[in-house]
Image (tube, rainbow, N blue to C red; front, side, top):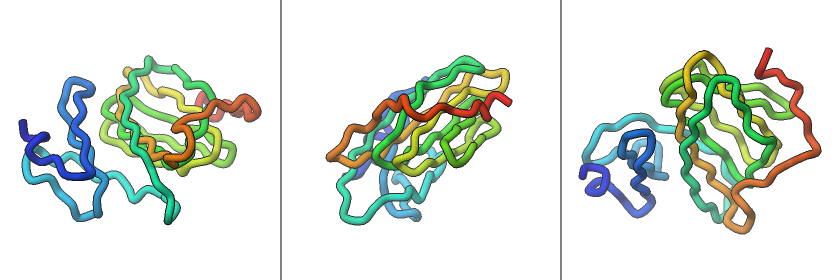
Length: 150
């Protein structure tokens, strides 16, 4: 398997969305020794002298689905494989228009993700969270303004 042979010290091999993925946290110029290079995501906004833990997830949402309001103790990066994404935080709304799009949000603010468009949203997520804190916390104080559904 190409992903296993290209795996480095800061790499993780994941089977997700019908494919094998090699996720590597590395310098911008890094490229795998084998397989098919897909995309670089980052740089991610991290704090110096903080230990981080990587959590990888897949997400599959029907159009119009929203997540619970939540926050992360470090940056989160979304790679949308299909469908669209809108992310609302107290200060901003970020959108991608479909496949092979990237959204990055810094750690800290509460957020809500909405699947947009007419196609099932399928994506891969990296939460690079502060190792001394939970990856995700749920927030009931902030109420989204619904800017992703307009």
